[in-house]
Length: 349
Ligand code: UD1
Image (tube, protein in one colour):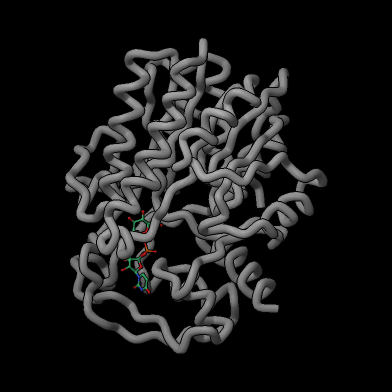
């Protein structure tokens, strides 16, 4: 695979990665290391495993610094910043992300995703200079009217509390940046999939996966009987819903270039927003076909009703990330699926 090269940064800085043992966080830790950054990870292990540290170590050859800490504990956050005064940038992944669970337990989501953001920003606004990358989501666009989706497409009222935490999170970052020395980049992810090509780290869904690709790979290894395709009566070419699936390693590299932009002071606004996707839409049936090609397995599936809250189509216009960040996704859907498949087979032994 030929990924965008990340130029090494001259002076090494300590970067805090919250949620750094999670799916996107762990891949970003690897890419930060590759780009010459020193990293300290905070994670409360609520949706990750300490084994991920070993996976990262196998890839980069050293174990990154790790602090087990729950960001909902304000005092611990304050203490952390008292003992880590040399942090040059923060990439904030730590958050809950299950849409259905957020509908059932909204306050858990507001506490996990909003309180923690507030506590972090309270510490960062005390600094002379702070660089902050926030994990946002294309969910803030709802069903956009125009495809591909540009960053200036209107933000809509999200259907789920999870989506709302991303919308509110963006607003909080913007408000705080206005009155402080914080510079920030909001990255709106499309659909992250795949795993590191080494298969040392990847996605570890809790329970039955809600997302398409982990459900497919678990069906492929026989852990699930069949995939339910949620609706084939959408106004799309084959009737199934269309998304922009981006390889998690490409997504991780977008964080590194965004951070380098902030650190080198090249940002033109206090808060910049970028879509992070491939720019290409794929239907559920196209993903199934691509998976069958790379795995050489027949995937059992049936068509069922649409899933409540799902949109028809979403794929990114990535012109801004391409021209301003000099970043573009390098992996194909097939490469991303092949890496997810390799990872799934490895963890199932
Ligand atoms: C979902 C979340 C979104 C979140 C993103 C994180 C919802 C409504 N949205 O996006 O807020 O940011 O995950 O990755 O949950 N599908 C099936 N069968 C399955 C699973 C999925 O057909 O078993 C279909 C879905 O209907 C959808 C596509 O596959 O068309 C992708 O689904 P998924 O991976 O859950 O992502 P999103 O729904 O796009």
